[in-house]
Image 1 (cartoon, rainbow, N blue to C red):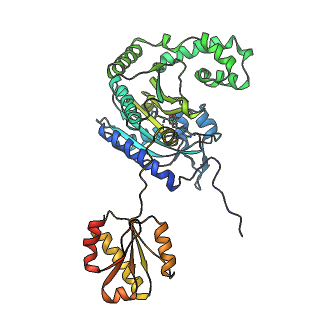
Image 2 (spheres, protein in one colour; image 1 turned 120 degrees about the horizontal axis):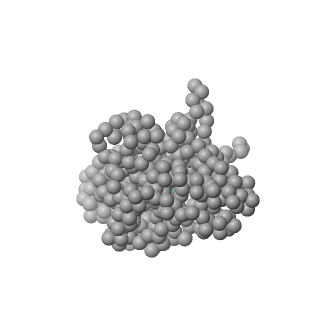
Image 3 (cartoon, protein in one colour; image 1 turned 180 degrees about the horizontal axis):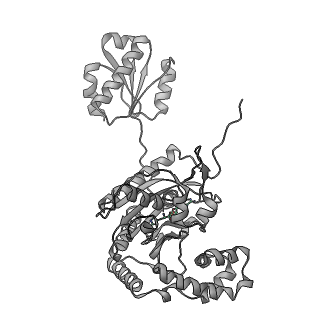
Amino acid sequence: MAQSIQAVRGISDILPEETAYWQLLESQLSRIVASYGYQEIRLPVIEQTALFARSIGEVTDIVAKEMYTFVDRNGDSLSLRPEGTAGCVRACLQRGLLHRQTPRLWYLGPMFRRERPQKGRYRQFYQLGVEAFALAGPEIDAELILMSARFWQALGLADTITLQLNSLGSLSTRKQYQQALVAYFQEYRSDLDEEHRHRLQTNPLRLLDSKMPAVQTLIAQAPKMTDYLDEASSAHFARLRAYLEAAGVAYEINPTLVRGLDYYTDTVFEWVSSDLGAQGTVCAGGRYDGLVELSGGPATPAVGFALGIERLALLYKQHSADKPHKQNLDIYVVAAGDKGQQQGYLLAEQIRDALPQLRIISHCGDDKFKSQFKKADKSGARIALIMGDDEAAQGNVGIKYLREDRAQETVAQKALFTVLGQVF
Ligand code: HAM
């Protein structure tokens, strides 16, 4: 026997039992985004590598270490998308969606990052992302946060997910802050390990989300980003907070929340649960007012977020008593003999025409009736329809009730639809 080939490490199959949960979550999420007037966009999984390097940032972990990059046959460097925002901005520019419009878009699909796999962290994972363009005020930031709060409410998860909020200021004030941060950490350079010294040099803001206890102690005394905000950023942040308070959305200000992608400006937020272990962030996003211009378009403010479907599914299963409704089969067609099998197939087609909501399986193969009935029973169907050569010749069909104490009967095929109308 040939050796079987396994799936790639960190990449899962989503099996039928699991897809029932995913369908439930996706239908709730897409209903809510539509209720805010957002429209779906379907974006490619592969883009030019340069798009991600430029948008997310060369020195971020995502671009420096985690992308699946390959050289196409014509020599182009392409990458599997590690996230959706860069591609969404590219599509908006390339397809003219930003021309005197304020698109509100959402997408759902797989993203790829070569991270170390663990619970809640995979190399292929699914995100639902939402992006709003050309709106500068804090009300759209608030709207996105309210929309995400509505997700948790609808799924019964509001008590387990909390909101963390920060402002990164404008690109220019962030530079000043970054200088102050570097000056501060330079004094403690000798306390830092190799990796943190590297961060200090390449991406100093990432020191703020260090997990190392010694560094965390230093961070407590470090300059605070919120002290460096200019007037416009402070006002934006204050108005956003006022919106959230008016809407009754609780939040915690986390001054060390910096995010792992370079494009953010002003508002950043994460929805976090303590029930997921180390990978507690279910949903995250913020404003990225500089990205459209950086991508070659006109200066255009933008804001968005993405939520991880696997993490949401893990949480939902932990917290919800409701199992997704198992979709049982309705009818199993048992058939034997040349004429019977042919007539059984045709009958199943006629039922699908007349009653499209029913789920019907026609038995395949020449098994004995006994073994076909066993399969019918195991299938979970409510009734078996029986079609042998005799029934076919006489224009009849047998009905066996698999889940109720009711005698088997034979009816004319013409009368079948009346019976099915009563049963289903
Ligand atoms: P992100 O924080 O990199 O942001 O990812 C958003 C969410 O995707 C995370 O909070 C998490 O739930 C999920 N996620 C990320 N990596 C993994 C992984 N390896 N395995 C499982 N789930 C994961 C972004 O991607 C931005 N594009 C969000 C955004 C949209 N900002 C503005 N617009």
